[in-house]
Amino acid sequence: MQYQSQAVAKPYFIAALGLFFGQIIFGLIMGYQYVAGDFLFPAIPFNVARMVHTNLLIVWLLFAFMGAAYYLVPEESETELFSPRLALAMFWVFLIAGALTILGYLMVPYAALAEMTGNNLLPTMGREFLEQPLITKVGIVVVALAFLFNISMTVLKGRKTSITLVLLLGLWGLAVFFLFSFYNPSNLVLDKYFWWWVVHLWVEGVWELILGAILAFVLIKVTGVDREVIEKWLYVIIAMTLITGILGTGHHYYWIGAPEYWQWLGSVFSAMEPIPFFMMTVFAFNMVNKRRRDHPNKAATLWALGTAVMAFLGAGVWGFLHTLAPVNYYTHGTQITAAHGHLAFFGAYAMISLTIISYAMPILRGRVANSPAAQRWEIAGFWLMVTSMLAITLFLTGAGILQVWLQRYSDTPLPFMVVAEKVALFYWMREVAGFTFLAGLISYLASFFVVGQEAWEHKPAAAGAYAK
Image (cartoon, rainbow, N blue to C red; front, side, top):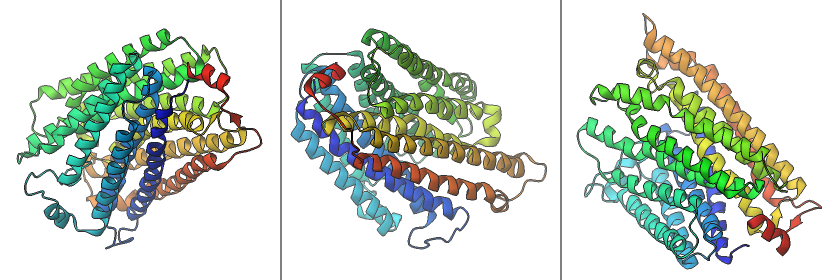
């Protein structure tokens, strides 16, 4: 059955998609600035566009994760959300704080913004992904604590499942590790050492638990495979994720002044990080092959399978390409890193967010699945975004390989800007692929407005069958 309080997920999903659209727009601006550096200067210089692009990524994913939790936890716990009013209040707090922060980046010089927002009281600004002003970081903590209180109380008063326990572990881990963003030591080695406790232990640690829990939930719904089978897979995957992800943090410590043993620890355990992603791919396809029902939401099933494959390619294969210390010595900070980052973030976290939105939004709008016409638009968006992101990754990989050869490995290394000019063709192709990605996202968004002649209405009997 469906629960009335699940409706609070809807504004979170809508905000996530809107911010996702904004992130892609700023990505296209940055992509063009790679080949025309004075584009929109001085209104939006590259450093500001990059800051907005990456901050929008983090914020829209957090909105999606919170929406996913608000949707699946009541259903898994078989009880209404502890406080829907608190969830909606925190939605507006987070949205307004996020919007004001982005406007601050765009309208105020960063140094002035730091002075205005009390950075002198507790310096936390100036680090990649963690550029948010102190007041915004405090707001994020308040929103996260209210969210976790709401979700945890819902789980405590209802049924406990493996999915909700794994999801809670991931969400609490996300909040705990974010606290290291308030620690900004003056020693650069210490700064980088603990900076990765936020960034790495988010994306290669606790976020993977959130990914696994959401994927397991969607697969149970669309395949009808026994919960016990899916939960066993989930436990094995998260165990491998935590073992490899935590010690794999060492692959960021190679060249920052940390002890040499991190080269071995980082190389060995980060080389094992593709294993849980490969297991996730096998798991997803196995569950779909063993399905006991033919769910009408074909698009959500496709997104679930695509998430497993693209996460394995982006976080697994492209991560492994440059994770070993002898290779990373040459590739660190090149476009190869950018290629891995784009495919990993999209494949693992953007796609699982689009998966749960694809599954949940039709139900929140009163039907089991969107009409066939709407799903055709959504599936077209899926293929456009996936193929475009693969193209972006390949173009950035090509640029990175040339960059390594011309700038770092050659006996006569060339200056950075000379190399940037020589690889400009790859940047132009990346920009074209970026516009194709935008077309795919527009197609995905358009699917929500296409009704078609046949919309599966959310009849009580059918709803109960698909909600169990």
